[in-house]
Image (tube, rainbow, N blue to C red):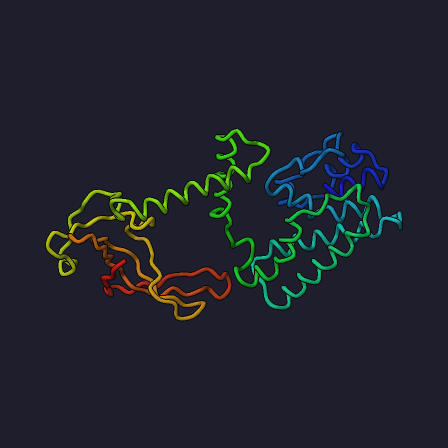
Length: 301
């Protein structure tokens, strides 16, 4: 959006001319499948690209060539052309499927150049700096630890956004949302502490009691009950869940896959786990588990 606004307001090119250039651009066969959408006439108020998904990526990838064709004859636009090209190079790096130390160093240099050139552009075109710009500067170190962005999922953490949105709607507080979220968490924490200190039992049964197979009979005591899932001291344990039993190194863990959960007569909780090693993938940085076939172990929670 910054580039398109610059072309219209600083390059003195109409939105119709820009749309005509976008629609008649010689796209490749793959790019034609996700062709960028037309820009609205009120481009000054546009905050995001009208297209979604891969069409936005296509728009950014073809942008340098469109900018060069429309602005290159004017030397006063060279900084803007360089800035737009730099943004496209950074996007390509973010979409890379593999990184080495040399490429990460290149990424850091380009990010540094991005923030330097950004200061030379007109403020009325740029979006004000936001926390996301600061997060962006940490991308090389994050990629070094977690792997390429294309192989990293943030949905598990972003799912907590719904919590803030729901609290905002329920409390009807649209001006001071952090206050509502903070109060809700304080009430929840106080409730958990109260139940932990004064509750009747630390164990909450979630699933029905099940029969135990013959291979696990040696672990059963008189009056022991067997379950597939329970809530114990505020934590939910379930069959096929994984426990970390020991940490050897940063990239190597001893883990146990839960087979059954045993609750003894004295309310002590044991789990039968199948031991295995969890190793961090060298390239993608996630852990993968190698379970041993018949190495079962019974441990207390």
